[in-house]
Amino acid sequence: MVLDAPGRPLRAAELPDPVPGPGEVLLRVRACGVCRTDLHLRDGELEPGHLPLVLGHQIVGEAIGGDAPAGARLGVPWLAWTDGTCAYCRGGRENLCPNARFTGRDADGGFAQLAVADARFCLPLPPAADYGDLDVAPLLCGGLIGHRALRLAGDGERLGLYGFGAAAHIICQVAVHEGRRVFAFTRDGDDSGQAFARELGAEWAGASDEPPPEPLDAALIFAPAGALVPLALRAVAPGGSVVCAGIHMSDIPSFPYELLWGERVLRSVANLTRADATAFLELAPRIPVRTRVTRYALADAERALADLRAGAFEGAAVVVP
Ligand SMILES: [Zn+2]
Ligand SMILES: [Zn+2]
Image (cartoon, rainbow, N blue to C red; front, top):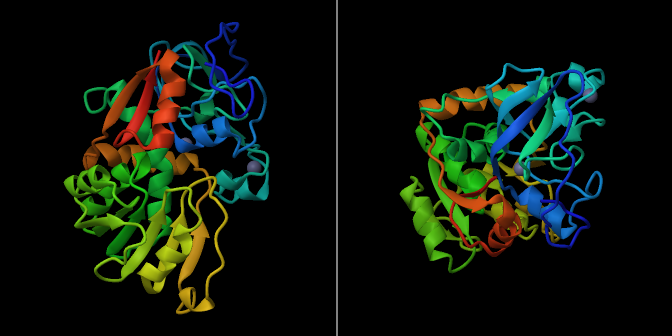
């Protein structure tokens, strides 16, 4: 399924089989998670690396050629390649490498039957007995980057989650496992989203412009709405953190300085490191994190994106060739 140009629907196409270069793996795609970043690329809110482009950066694949044992089940996340030489890479912050390439943006991704990936950036996955191909796919972005956001938010007990989609439904389970209290914020009137959050252990769920019943120690913003930033700052106690976990957000409205005053911290989280991935994929089966997945045939990838835009499902969408 290719994106010909931002704003146009994905189109089924026959492309030449990708050929793995040195150090690369050829994968038969078994499943690929759908992320809001795919939607931002589709809708022209993020610049694609090339066109036509194959989206999808939560690939569960089986190695069938190149630099990996045949039959190995591997995950391919958003981080596709880094230079390994810049100050960020050498300092353990490869997520900020200025030359990084990303799956489904710079390199063709997993909304396809076959994909090629750099073997050094492929992830060994938990055993199939713990996670089937569909179940594990949403961990590869929503889980990994969501977990990075959770760690950057500090250890506070009262955690707000703004936007209860693929990432939040995973991170809610991690936070509850860590003994935190979760407060979930959704669109006003999203009763099913709020019920879903309570089902996963949130002690409170309400509309994003509602004040929580008590101040928060930290908040993660997964929804791409800049208007949530002052709302979240207002909801956190002095010393608390607000972490913006998405790659794109609408403009943030101006707000009075007193919302930031009191040593509140406002920051973003960008991409992931391979160390983040290893840590989270070891942690997830021990909790165990359970994903709620809606399955779409590969040919229906455009419909999966439309349903994500409309908030038509709980949890995560996964495309299956
Ligand atoms: Zn993603
Ligand atoms: Zn670098």
